[in-house]
Length: 237
Image 1: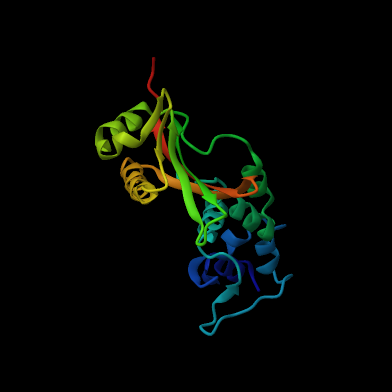
Image 2: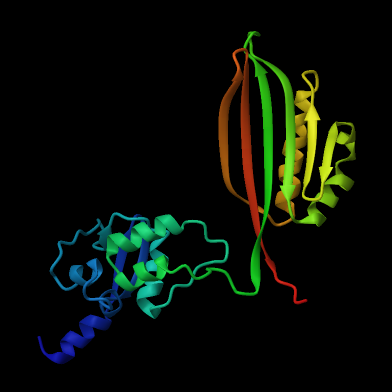
């Protein structure tokens, strides 16, 4: 193969099927880092598989491969500000053995613009249950919202007056509602409305968790937690 044919081969479009997602690029892009798995694959040192349409098939996360491919094209890592799958992307970078990308993902520098920061809202529901009853009876439920976003707490105080009689505690960064055994179903209704309200303020759920514990032989406590986050711009003093 002469130099002209080799150059044409490097720039000729090639289509990859990565986990069902199709990507079209060039061999020169895929070989940008020769020591990577893709570099070896398209150098002929690594076995390849084709799908029914003749595309190169790679059984990996097709959605995350867009960030892998963009890094190969630009040698820069660009992620959305609300990107939540860093651990998965690290695994993909490790699989493809793209060392500069692995180092980039290990760099502790902030992923968000320097003029932004992350606001957090914690929503928790603590429910004490009696083991003596069958079915298990609710003894008491407490719903707590914790955040440093004072405007959100003020909005809750102003928009959820229907549940004022249950508001037992208000602090600088926290609002709590307590429900007895006869009205615990109202806690469920309030929680649904609160989650909808928080989401409409631009927050998205980052994670959820459940914790079970027994304080007494006849009581069991179940705690549900939701963490909401949103980006905000820093205000100069």
